[in-house]
Image (cartoon, rainbow, N blue to C red):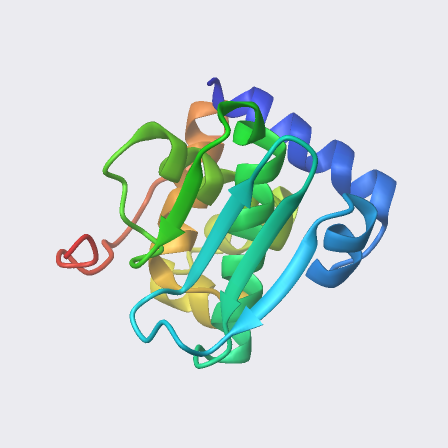
Length: 167
């Protein structure tokens, strides 16, 4: 799926919902939200059957991580629900397949406005600094900036995320 399509889907949803609270998106999309604490390694999961859609979020994660995971799982709902698959997130930034990267691009598109990230980058901020300023994980900032580059922004990415984030 093209990054511009993912970005457009995320931005359309932001305009419809008009909020930064993931629960508002879950309510708007009529997704059944289930907080869980009995899967120690699982961060989140999206499950869809013919008529119902579920998002499970591990409440043992920090509130900030829960928010990121919720938007990631909402991304699966918006972008991939017709596949009738179960998407389990043990490691949020695992790019083992396109669907995980697409869900991360979707989450980054909602969580970090282009103009904010572009302004920080234009001011010479490092990826680590942008992560701190936006309250996001450095790896999600990298995903966002690479997405922005592919969509035509002139960004120079000045540092790298952890090399082991896929483990």
